[in-house]
Amino acid sequence: MVKRSYSFKLALLETEVSDYFGLRKQIFCDEQGLFEKNDQDALDNVAYPIVAVVHTPEQADHVVGVVRIYEKQPGLWYGGRLGVHPDFRRMGRIGKGLIQKAVTTANAWGCDRFLATVQLQNVQFFTRLHWNSLEEIEILGRPHHLMEADLEFYPAADQRRPSLPLLPVPLQSTARVA
Image 1 (cartoon, helix red, strand yellow):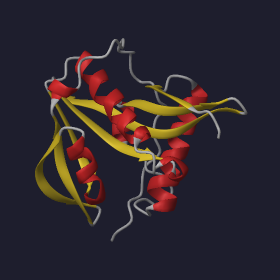
Image 2 (image 1 turned 180 degrees about the horizontal axis):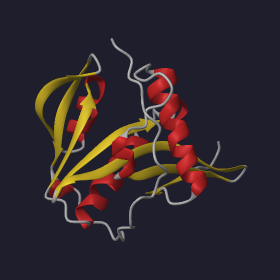
Image 3 (image 1 turned 90 degrees about the horizontal axis):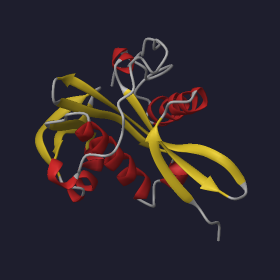
Image 4 (image 1 turned 135 degrees about the vertical axis):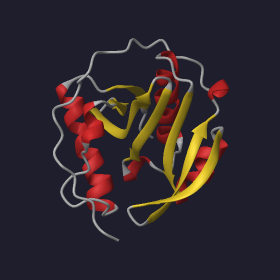
């Protein structure tokens, strides 16, 4: 049995940011077909990328999960583009760790409300993690729920807020019409 450990952190290094976008492309373009060439948009100019990194004795560390957070207006934060590499989805710990890191980080930076649009198949998972569905919506022709985190279950992390921009100017995404 392979001994693995995981860390969840802001993607601050060039390699982490590159791997972050690479995994997003794999999930949202290649696998789900939501976008044609890439999934980058203007929010990437103001978002903080968070990655899940797997550590094993026999392999170099690599990114296995991604999410971004951004402040839409003072105190109102959003999470988005949550994704986990297919080989690591069945565990549940990667998605949970990314959500935990996202909300506790925003909470440390003055979050009063934390929202996310969640694909229908993931609503139950978020509900178990103390999120509430506010409404059903459709995004890119697919059912989603606008959900809100119960901040009492996500105490503020000890995370300094870096200056923006962290990421290069994004490419224009091209959503596929469903």
